[in-house]
Length: 146
Image (cartoon, rainbow, N blue to C red; front, side):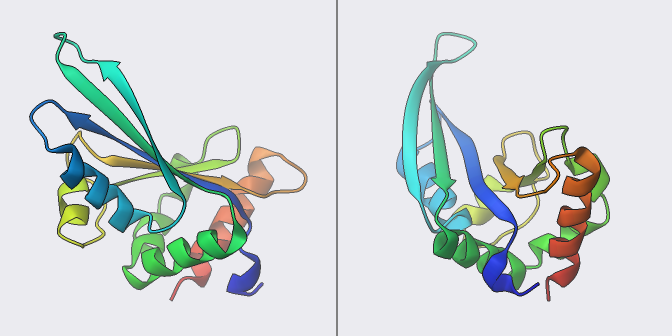
């Protein structure tokens, strides 16, 4: 299958902005990681009553999904997650991986090494909607990456 018909229904990326961080920096990192779609922000209460904001970016339009995937592919992200794709798939056909927030702010895409990442979820299009079929789809798109 060509990249034109990537079997991805939705890309969702979320990250947290802690009281110690500048929200603008965190938003910039998220925008670099997912250069399409819209950002929504949700203020939450942190563990110690300190402020915490969750930023979520969601992409559902085909051209946007393709553009994001091309950025990730150019950075080697699909190749980096291909080897443990089984562990990254959940029962709902969602592929999970985590990008490094600080690296993204510096305009680099790397898998997260710490516990404060950008969480990415790819909802795959799989028929029938069974975990085995979703895994097959995941393998096929990750293997196609340059």
